[in-house]
Amino acid sequence: MIYAIAPVQILKGQATQLNIYAVTVQLDSSATIQWSLLDASNVGLANGAMTLTGTDYTAWGTDDSYIPAQVAVQLGVTLA
Image 1 (spheres, rainbow, N blue to C red):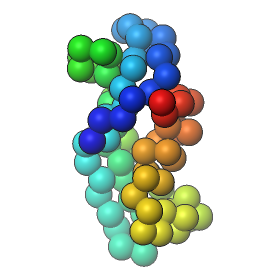
Image 2 (cartoon, rainbow, N blue to C red):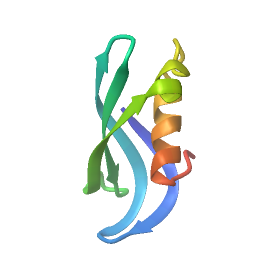
Image 3 (spheres, rainbow, N blue to C red):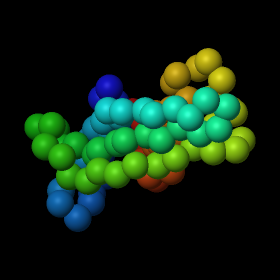
Image 4 (cartoon, helix red, strand yellow):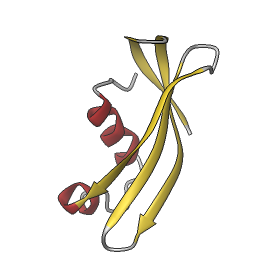
């Protein structure tokens, strides 16, 4: 799913979107999230993965809006 972010300059250009394209869950343990930063033309500028564990994982609960918010915090970007 693609989320608008406040524009941020990175090495390859200006990112304006956060794409979360896969979440792998280890029940009662962790979630690994695949993400990419895109420009306004949907061109990928950066990508990676992060794993939520411990309190970050348990805070997710049933509110899926937590995932993009947490990824944005970890990447230092602001959801628009």
